[in-house]
Image (cartoon, rainbow, N blue to C red; front, side, top):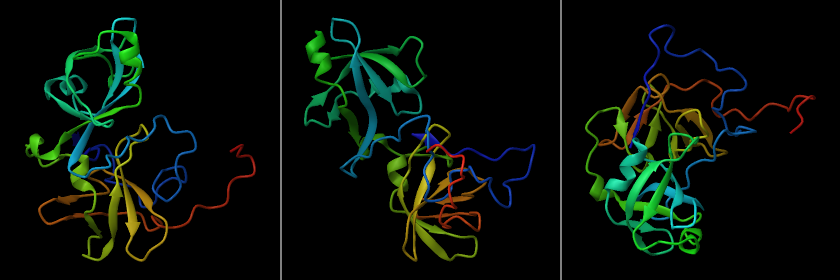
Length: 224
């Protein structure tokens, strides 16, 4: 579960136009802080985490948690693994020196390094119906946003949400324009997306005018 950030009370809700380096068009960040969360191939499943390298010799393994409270991933019981297995986490603790969403976990039935190595890059998911409904209007499951229609404040359809990536600076809505063409990225905050209507199958966005504008020419001193 994630939360849609609100706007700051110390300044305007949003600028008229974003700075050139802001990630709001079809361009992607050149050196993202994080890789986007992998997408579940099954829309009925919600991704909760992804295994990394083994930790030690006795079956522990690193796990990147996608849950709002990282350690909560250990409380969901049996989970669907991307290799077809059903796995259950027996223990989880924060990884030393890592980011808050990086854990050290133990998997039921895995008690050696070779078993932990076999988990590397495998994702864990849960059936959407097991998660229930968010209790707060600004809490949401990312999977529920995929496919929603995006309207501007006048009610004009401007596109459809096709993904919700996160490159380290917060969730973004990847929007496919209704008129066709490359997708664009819009920060998923109250400032840019003031209305979220899951029941109505839509969001109302207040995007910058150049949301779908093609990226400008690369600066001469850009090494990329």
